[in-house]
Length: 178
Image (cartoon, rainbow, N blue to C red):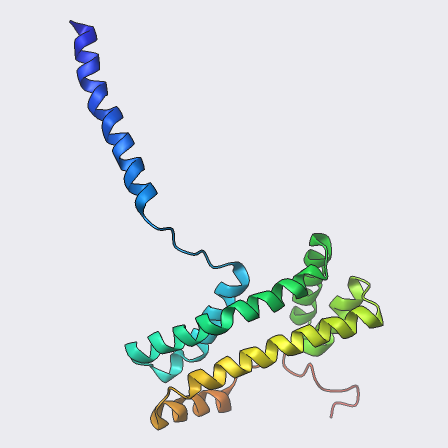
């Protein structure tokens, strides 16, 4: 009798598990964003958050980002391929420390590149790829700005005037204190 009870209890559990597995298999999987893609999307949408975009504007902005994302990710992969995993880690840590010490972004980048031993040719190639990536990001930013109303553009200008300062105060001053 106990065997029959066990079968009666276990059979529905086994059947329901297999049915749930079949349901999951039917659902199309969402395309996962890689780290670079997610960072760019988040940065862009955060940049425009001050404009208080409407739902339609946000949807259009996301469409613009999606259209340019493949090229941006391709460029990002090329940049990342220039370094080994250890070099990327060293470079990131050096950049963080340099920025914490009050160095400008440009000086921190130079220091990080020196830390991983970049020669002149690889530095030139790196800068060219980053310039292409920045050009694409600026193009996407311009397209999204085109979606904004005049009032929203004014909000963006007010944010730009206020700005965000990096590094420590006085870090750009020379030895003469000028």
